[in-house]
Amino acid sequence: MLRQVSRRRVAGASLIEVLVAILVVSLGILAMAGLLGVATRFGKTTEFRSVATLLAADMADRMRANYTGRADYFLNNATLALGAPAEAACANPDACTKDEMAAVDLAAWQATLYKSLPSGTGYISPSDADSTLFDLWVIWRDPDAEGTNVVGNASNVAGASACPPKFSTAAAPRCMHFRIGL
View 1 (cartoon, rainbow, N blue to C red):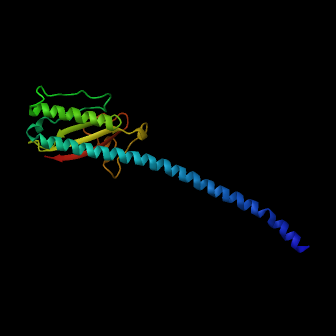
View 2 (tube, rainbow, N blue to C red):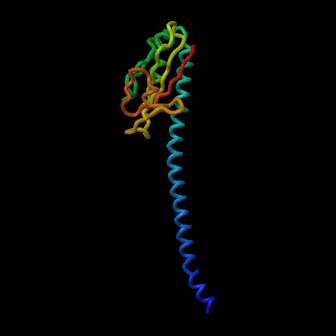
View 3 (cartoon, one colour):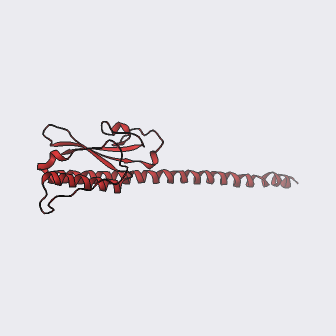
């Protein structure tokens, strides 16, 4: 008789153990789903950073190749790109002047920024009197940060605090700053 009483007390315990195990596994799966979403978002941000770095290096190489025309590489847009930038061409395609080459380089770079980054644009200004140092910003709209307050972080991608002077910070811009030495 004693054995039957102890079995009856234990019979409901396994059901509770199964329910607790299901709860723990469910919470683990939900946490993994949230982690996957965050990892995907950071992966896209990393992609944008890589593209911005490559395009900044491209512009630096263009400026170094046209060293005598370096004074013509000023680009000071005040907002994010709203449409495809205008194209530029040389009057004589076989013999561009240094000024024309700078205009073609800037137009090609702006078009590549616009196509490669969401509303991508660039900003270039000289850092010294003899135009051998330039500050270059690559700027794009971060789709994940729209409607939020983007603040600077440990990397060089930040919101308004890292954007060029007099730059419109509407629409959650992400800015990367580079110092180019020619």
